[in-house]
Image (tube, rainbow, N blue to C red):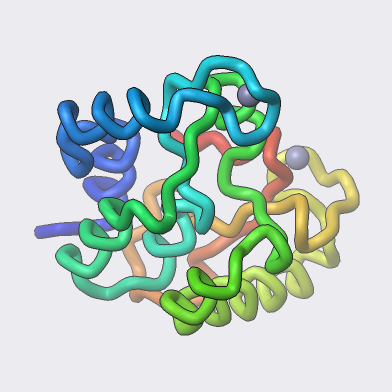
Length: 163
Ligand SMILES: [Zn+2]
Ligand SMILES: [Zn+2]
């Protein structure tokens, strides 16, 4: 059965979802890091993959969102890593927001709910956090129903790592 863990590892092994040649070709034509101007070696998803992961019900919807080039931007490894899955709504261009409004709104609402439960503290380090600098994710080994906020935590970017 397809589950969040499978999904996450597929996401890490980008090639499982984004064809290697597609990626290479994209970076050939989009070779400058959007953030710092260095040589781009990775594809950054403007709306983080995690937003889709946390809100989409069907595998095929998730895959096509990950493959959607209108949500790609070139990035160097360092900038991609620094950004991870944190985002603010103003980072998202209107055309993308309109396209994935349901997912974005749902993600932001869930993130806010979980943050309120956690009193705006990172579940990893306990430091005070704001919505814009945090990432919503499932608890380790969580196998409950999707959308169950009790199976979710919010962390700062530094403590986003899983398992
Ligand atoms: Zn960069
Ligand atoms: Zn933390």
